[in-house]
Image 1 (tube, rainbow, N blue to C red):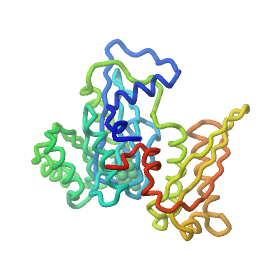
Image 2: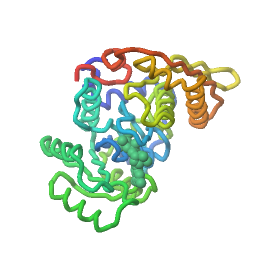
Image 3: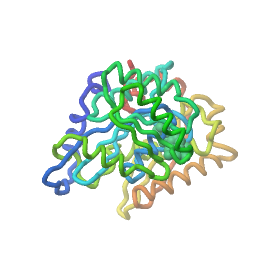
Image 4: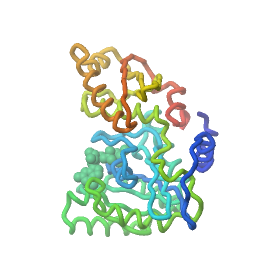
Length: 327
Ligand code: GDP
Ligand code: MG
């Protein structure tokens, strides 16, 4: 991917995707609405969890670790006559390494193209974190009004919530404030109502039954990477990536998926493999189970672990992830 591709408006990418997908669209309502909603927020604010709640299905991976999301994931929420195209962004944080800069550029790219920007804040934290303040400053610089969403209200008393709302409202960057729990679903319907009312009138860009434009292969790799995160906890090296190498569909309806887990060093490979391969086996079993549910068919999953030094400096990897190497 080049800078050019990166700057392509989301709508062009969508229409290209639509040309490729042969499925006929469901009949749309008489007065449809459709628009892009970018979810921005500090790492761990709950963006992926909220996206899944908004869409009503698991489309973006959720993990207690920060920076799990590396690519833009488009979740599609159908609400009344509106089709809401959600862009889940990598957490916006202060970039130091090249990979981080690319992730941040992708995050802001998603926000710039969107019809609505929603800033998600973890309300359970004692103070407003510096990442959130950076984002607010950036919104103000860009004269971009956003919807403020205070998340994780299941964890804090109401008084604290109101103080936080006041504190952030004083920034003058927000049109409204919503209070939700992405985890329990509290307040999510109100949020959907508001988004649906505010996206522009216009035809749906996707068939009504589609949940995400993330290619299945990439989605399958994300599922395995999520299991890696969950099973290895702190041990997992940050620069680990999973790629789907092959995807073979059989007459009986099953699919054989081969994936490679790339690590940077031999000792990391040993960690991922575990004693006698027990770790990678457990990761594979968990991933296969979820893939079977997701794809609704039998899955044979083959996992390989390989050492690839310096993949974070390889432009090709960035292209595959839809990130800009030169950000
Ligand atoms: P992201 O980095 O912004 O995408 O955040 P995630 O969606 O991955 O969530 C980070 C962590 O916060 C996960 O452990 C979630 O389960 C948790 N989380 C997200 N939303 C809520 C919420 O409303 N309440 C609680 N208690 N936890 C939440
Ligand atoms: Mg995320």
